[in-house]
Structures are given as structure tokens and as C-alpha cells.
Image (cartoon, rainbow over the protein chains, first blue to last red):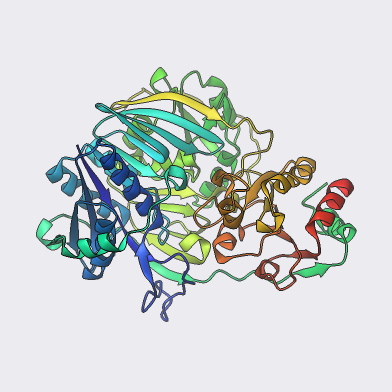
Length: 250
Length: 308
């Protein structure tokens, strides 16, 4: 069984992000980029399933500029077998991403699409669910455990206030949450080997998909910073403030 | 064009977030209807009908919705979408699971985690875990919005709106509910709690972390943790507040022994009042805290518990 893992190149989570000078986007010039952490977890899970003999091949795919080859190489170095770059300068909305991935899945016919639950830049949390909808596949979002048994996946989901376990008939879509695993680091020999693995490249244009933009970003701003408050000299003063000024405790 | 809100419910009760989603919907200026889908949900429908601003409640009562699986729910929602200008749900794990699936079936995008309705087509939403706020405009005839419930004040109650039954539709597509484990904790759920008490590496050990429970108990608070505390093994990462953990926006957030790494601040800056207790007065947490206590948390915490 083949597993497709779509990944996204994002600004590294340690970077302090800023709006662009014109205030309509996020400044990504000369900042450190990385594979989205949740995509990294999805990839790790796919690689582990392959190592346990439950999957035959792991294909990573990303949609972006040529620069995203860096993240695909990183994915090859931790165990992906093949990589596909769908090149475009456009920043696609989640539905457009899902439509593009639907085409890839229809061509590749995997038994499982494993994605991160969300990208830490746009924070949309949509692509996996949309992909499942467009394919007519069952879904399990926010996975904290994935087991494959024959033609079925048993997935434990992390939901508000607890856990829910679902069984999905394959093929299916699963999105990874933080607790699913701890991704490995690439070993140097594997990084060297990954440099020699081919990355298949095609352009979004040649796929001839209709992907109209539906939203427009009018502004990106830094939220009004919180005012630095006051240092109090006693627990009594704190309780007084919380009870009588802020009225957040009784 | 009206708005349709997908009602979230558990064990016969509507989620408190629903009253906040109605508040967001009222800002759109369109008539508001609510959709209750579940099995034996008469009582849930009655509760939804009392949310102030809801003009009609649609009920799809069928065993196929018993486990609240995204597959049949999204199909049902998308089938009704044509008659509406907006589809809304809370950006809870339930809303996040169902809503994008319904949007894709309806052929439209979704605007996630709306924190402000600027006008009927323009919305503000946090990106980069709240480090930035984007203002986005959608001209789609159907706008699908997930609502960050904590950004809106709950609506009150009204005389019940009419309730109508609609036909059940949608299949599970091979998904099957197996079991659920609701946390047995007496503490409220982290993302819904009115008060959150969080601990960081300053607590020093797994054992010391339990010191938070006393204060949390007095305040009926949820317990959270910084990434550093999770990485140090004091608590499991389901309690992690931050960019890669849970995003919380309680009325009161008490950070104990947390230095205030950007990662953590991203998850709690939406709190109304932030209190920091830390030994190091230079700790970055004090830059966002409304009130600070500088000192030994092992003295301050028991004192706070005693005096609350």
C-alpha cells in the first residue's frame, strides 16, 4: 500500500513574523523556512508504517516554488521514497490545494493520505478534510494513534475534552496531531543519499485545474500588543485586583 | 440570505460555544437558523431554539448522526447550504472536523477562526498562532466561517423559535465509531475553561506540578503547561498551551513558573487578564502580564490557594 504525504514549506516556528511593508502579507524574505511541524509528524508516521511493513511506498508532495525542494529533500532524508513538486508562484487557498492534491491522489491511488492537521502559518486546518470530501473518502482528523489492520485503519483522535477512536475503511484521509509521534532527525548519510534521489517536478499550470481565488487578504497586522502590567507586592494585592478591579474571580 | 449554524452538542446538551457563535452570526445582519443533527436530540433542539437571535431550528434526528461523524454531517450541511449565505460553526475540534468537509462539498472555501466581523464580507482572523491578524474578504455567494468562540460574548435566551424536522441524509463512507474516552478529570476542559492555571519549568518536577491543583480547584480552573514543562516530562502534552499546543482565551490566565517563550505566548495572549508568578523579574512573561508577583512560587502558590 502506498501512502501520500502532502507537506508545506512554512516560516520556521522560531521566527518572529512581521507584516510586509505594504501591510498586506507576511514578510518571508530572508527568514528561516522549514517543513510545517504537523506535516513532519504525518511524514514520520508514514515512514514508521513502512518500516513496520504496513506500507510499501511513501510519496511526499508539495505545492510551491522551486525553493520547496529543500523540504522535499528533508523528507527524502527521513525516509520518504519519492518526492513530487508541483510548481507555482501562486499562494493557493486550502480548497485549491485540496483540488490539486485530489488530482495527485487519483493518479497515484494510495491507500492512505496522511497530512498534518494544519499549517502553522495560515492556521486554516482545512486541507485534509477538504481532500477527504473531494475524494469521497472517510476521514480521521487530529490523530494521536494510527494502526493499520488489513483494509482498515484504526485511528485515535484527540478531541476537546478527550479521545475518540474511529475505524476507517481504506482508502482514507488521516490528519496528524502533536501527540502522534516525535519525528526523527535525519542522519548525515541519509541526507547525502537523499541528495541523489530524484524529485519529480511538474507545474500547476500543466495540470489545467480550475482554481479560482475566493478570498482576498486586505491587511496583515501585528495585534495591538498587550500593555505591560504592574508588579504587585503581595498575594493579597493580587486577589484584590482580580476580585474587585477585574472581577474575574469571586 | 440567511445564516445556518451547525449546533455542537454532547450527551443531550448544546455546547456553550453555540451561544457565542450566534453572537458572531448576529453581526452578519442576516436571519439566523440553526441545524441540530444527532440521534434523539429533541432536548438539544429545544435548547438551540432558545438561543437569542435564532429564528428557526432544523432538526435531522437519525441514528446515522449518533456518533457525530464528519462524513454524514458534512453531506447534510452541504445539502442545505444552497439556501444560505453563511454556514457557521465553532472552531472546536468538532467544527474543525465537519465544516471544511462541508465547504468542499459545497465547492467553496472556508475562513477559519474568525475573531471579528468587520462587515458582512470582511473578517479578521489570527494567523501564525496569533502573532499576526489578517483581514480577509470573501465575495463567495456562500461564506463558510469557523468562529473562535472565545472572541464573542454569549447571547442570552429568548422565547423558543419554531423547530422543523428535515430529512436525514449522508453516509458514513466506511467510517465507524469505536469508542470514546472523555477525560475523567474534574477540571474543566482547557480550551473552554473560564480560568486556566498553567505551570512551567519553574515548578521543577512532576511532583511539584500537582501544587497547581489546589489553586485550580479553588478557581474551578483548567490546568495547562508550557512546552518546557511538557518536554521536561512534568505533564503529558495534552496540557500544552502554545503555538503547537492548545490556544486558550480564558477570562483569567495564571502563569506559574513560566518564562514566557514566544511559543507559549502565542497560545494564551487572547486571555482577558494574565497573571504571572515568577522568580525572575526579567522574565518575558511580565511583558504581557497584567499583574505580576515576583518571588518563590513554592511560597506564593500555597498562600494564594489559602487566601482564595
